[in-house]
Image (cartoon, rainbow, N blue to C red):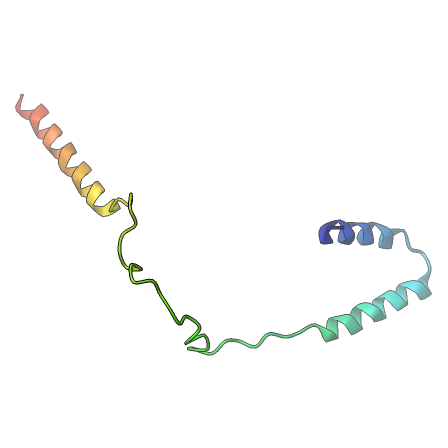
Length: 90
């Protein structure tokens, strides 16, 4: 079963419980399992250095079919300006 389905079933089931002793046992179980969960330490700067040992030679090259967006924008702006100037002069 998927985790989300199990969680939903447990929530629905827990709403139907009426036995206070059983509910107390579940509460104790929850508290002890919560204490056992791992607490992650914050990472220090440079903690992952030397993980990458190899990077492809063509890493910095542009991929085939890649278009420089800034260049395309400049070309479009230039085209629009020339179109506007042509309209104004005609």
